[in-house]
Length: 234
Length: 314
Image (cartoon, rainbow over all chains, first blue to last red):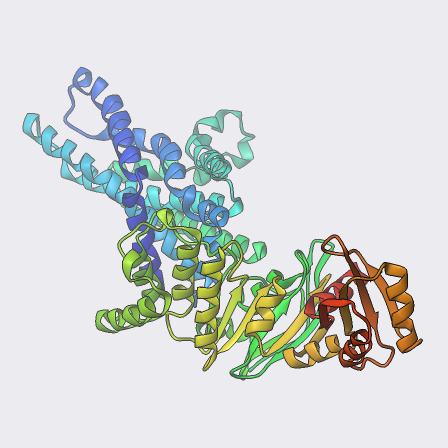
């Protein structure tokens, strides 16, 4: 357990030692801020619904950028060997890196907490959907981090890790909008697989155990896949 | 201490390590020698638990490899080839991270350990520098400090001196010898003089197989078996000198060599029974007015044995 903590802290600090953290956070804030506020005043509604509806698609590009280095860089530099020959298990490493990436995603979301504060000056904000939205955003980010982590474990090339990560996250994000093309028998299944509908429930302020279980299972599946990839690669 | 049986590793269908057997006694310094690509690094990587062997058994003390890998890892300190480290960290931060992972979480104990390691590996001046800015030799020392963080019983060093300049090599070797007094050390190298100078026992690997496994003294002694005498004379021409020397003992194998300087004649003289013929030669030459410029007995050193063993197989 303490090994997971040490690895997570180290990886989390690593983001802020290098310029990655600042670039990613700044870009994230610019992109979400622009898209959210460019239509915000037209609708004239004091809520965050548009912001949360942006998140799945924005996350599917930003989170793989956060996670792409986790394994790929270590493999490339060779420090993976140093890490693996220390008394840590594969599970410690995978979970440590996963928590670091999730924590960083949370840090990326943190400045956006200013939006509901400012919006509350110009109208009444319903706190339920906002709180639910942020909780959902954390689950969504964690699930995408697990997928990005898996993508990073597959290769020693960060660009490939990024593209695979994007492909995975993007698929889960837009699969709900493809239902029209699917055979009717599997529509319900595909709808369940897609991340957007589960996340939308959160951002409406609905805490449904089905959605929570969906995200947790997604996280478990991809961390376990990462574990298997790590084992197979050695 | 360490017992390796029938260790084999295949990369797809390429056999990198082929049924290697090794055993290392406590307190021994074992040199793993071999040409590039012989399987040294692969063997060490399996020994440290980085690679899973295709087949074979590794046991350290009374621990077995797949089952107790974590505990074996905590008994060992490992310095991988060219010391891959986290480049964006400061040396101090890196050492703190390693100490925590390896279970030294108490800050006082950490400081105490860092002081010892800084003295031993000469890190005091670079503690606050980013690892990326360090020279290769300094990185190697940080790597060594990493390996020795918990004062492990076993140290595994993969080509600890490769790519270093002669001064740095001497320093690293001195460190190895110093810690080798109380630790079990396995290190790989392809520099023979290094193995000769530091190891108690040498294992030579070629094409994934052990081709020699003996104490350094024994291997050297084996090299003595094929000694010869180098002789350089000033005065006679080649034919006269050759004929004259042959009169000494017709059984001698006398071959002319390319002279190092103009005006000299050189010979390589091999006695059939491997005895030392230097005094005989001296007494013989003394009868003439030739001048002896060089008279030296050369043994077929480790280099020759190494070349023989690794070329035959190739």
